[in-house]
Amino acid sequence: MSLTLRALLGASVSLTLAGAALAETTITVATVNNGDMIRMQKLMDDFYAKYPEIKVEWVTLEENVLRQKVTTDIATKGGQFDVMTIGTYEAPIWGKQGWLVSLNDLPAEYDVDDLLPAIRNGLTVDGNLVAAPFYGESSMVMYRTDLMEKAGLTMPEAPTWDDIKAAAAAMTDKGNEVYGICLRGKAGWGENMAFLTAMSNSYGAKWFDMDWKPQFDGEAWKATLTDYLSLMNEYGPPGASNNGFNENLALFQQGKCGMWIDATVAASFVTGAESTVADKVGFALAPDTGKGKRGNWLWAWNLGIPAGTQKVDAAKSFVAWATSKEYLELVASKEGWANVPPGTRASLYANPEYQKVPFAKMTLDSINAADPTEPTVDEVPYVGVQFVAIPEFQGIGTAVGQQFSAALAGSLSVEDALAKAQEITTTEMTKAGYIK
Image (spheres, rainbow, N blue to C red):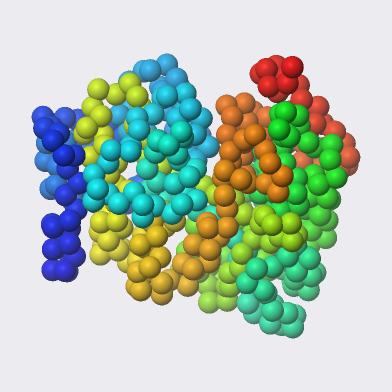
């Protein structure tokens, strides 16, 4: 650690809550098993040096298991966890229920105004910050610069869907197992429906009108699904209905995708040591149709404090440390700037060292292009770009995703898939009382 960084950490990182006298306290943190969270656990010496009176016990789980356990714990006030890692989907729902402790009183050094507005807005309920972002992402176009050059095309920085169609056609070479475009096809509210919901926003579609009536019977959803299936059937890889993030990442790294539209966090992997095309990757904003919305999503992993914990002060000290500017500098000093948790703070993107990371600017531009409070062309009664922040969405989203995945597999027509989506959604929303 450099003397400069040590001085910074020593002088300004002290995020001790004013006036809080903390006895020795052990807090339990539930978290997801991704690389960023595992890295944090290796850097805990820094936290213990600043807060010797607080001990942290980790419960590290696979994403789906984590979601089940923390949801059960907070809904039943089980008290098993003092800090929970939650997504942008859960935060507004739980905040509305009063299940999360407000973080509005974090110390001034925390600099809450440094949080990126799009990310902060997605975590704010009735004026209260209900979770602190640890890592944020949007989605964007990742494309092969060599294949575009060979085809005589130039990818615009802000392409339209027509640009994407033309590029996919030009780069496809099925005889050599090169496919113009790779997109999520695996069924799930966080898989194909994350992509398709974000894509539909750019076509002017929406899940519900202001009376919570499902909208799959409209022309905008028909255009979205028709174009998605056309792209994938003509220029996508075989078996695409089974492909999610990990499968498409492997295809791109193996040089089999001309384009991949997916999470900005993938940029470090397609340009990393395991990619065979690492030096041939360009980045562009997710496409649009000129209607004012792009087909990109917004997501963050965040740290929230359940309202039932008896260790609020200690939990806040941990959350403030883990999501601070100083934590980003700590990671950079140990692992390099490319490995810093991205997508949460404006100061990171103003840092000249981080600006050297090739995908930094496009990641920031993509995050800024998403607005979870106004996700669609028309007004809607919900928050969320690639999801609808209501408790029922997990089930409905996955059920609709199964119909669209079946259409990609060829077992349903566009019309039948949309009709089933409309029927499923109408039935569930009526049962839940949204539709009278």
